[in-house]
Image 1 (cartoon, helix red, strand yellow):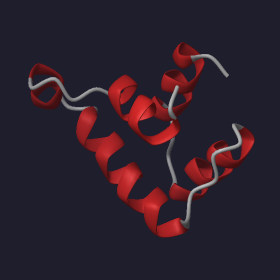
Image 2 (image 1 turned 30 degrees about the horizontal axis):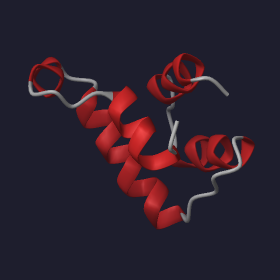
Image 3 (image 1 turned 90 degrees about the vertical axis):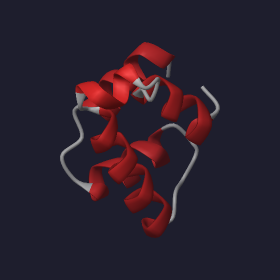
Image 4 (image 1 turned 180 degrees about the vertical axis):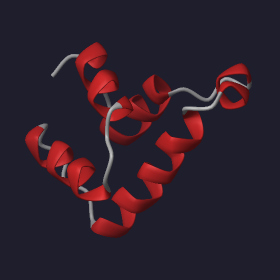
Length: 67
């Protein structure tokens, strides 16, 4: 999966279960605890202040999944 597609999918997640399923699809499974932490970080990145500080979903995708 390319980076843009992954970032789009991460941006549209509504539940932790969806994140767990997405991680399995790309071959980088996450424990439920890890998915919960990542889901929280994704939601934090959705506000404008986080983006101004340099926190983006693309950066999280690279850190978490190596993409």
